[in-house]
Length: 322
Image 1 (cartoon, rainbow, N blue to C red):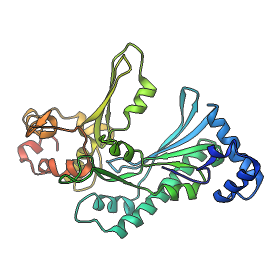
Image 2 (image 1 turned 90 degrees about the vertical axis):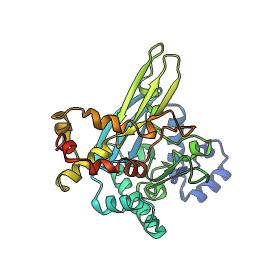
Image 3 (image 1 turned 180 degrees about the horizontal axis):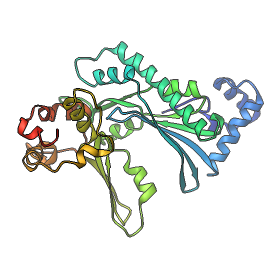
Image 4 (image 1 turned 135 degrees about the vertical axis):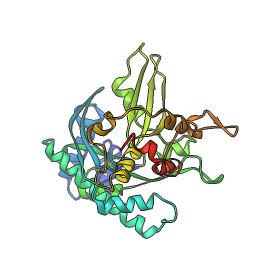
């Protein structure tokens, strides 16, 4: 889905003067100079000259807004600037509430959608400035949004769906930059899982002809990408990642610590084999469960319910991680 004043820019390039004026009025461009600027930007994108893009992401862990400025030049991708900006508690807490059934209040979701859109817009403008660029130099912003529901199997035989918030129209209005969003919905519509998305980036950055490569990404939920030397691509979630570790840190320190910074506490411990054995009995780690193939996609709510018993584990187990 595209949002912003340059939404129909590609269609304008070859139009005559009268048709250009029609589109200019539709897009709110009031003079020929601004219209020529729009067309010039798109010619640069079409000829694969240096183009700058902003990527925005707020993951399952809710530990911040990741914002990156990248430059694309032909097949080359360069990271110009990256920063993780704080996600304020006034946004984080309602996101967590909306992640659980029973708090499906539409007004709250609508308000949070707009508020998160503003937070994403401010993050984009901040990293653009720190990269030494202006909004006019950015071709587009890619904004994943914050996942509130992800039901690739549907609910009791309903149609599958996925829902992310962080209003792209608000980002476009605040920044003046075209915004691309709703990355997962098309895959869901095509009977896919809608996740993970990162294998496409891994393929672009790391694939090598004739070499088999595996990449493990440990976010709030962990996923793995397999890049075959023959050009094949495979990706799926492997299980909960930092989300459970963060919850454990908060639970066991009475919220004094939100995460294990640098993995320092984890590095002091060791694998507790009885606990690991019990965890691996979970249906997610089986190829088939009750005669049905297990889909390898996880969501925050599912992880929270399925592994909640970890926080009530016996003291003899807790002492190994406390």
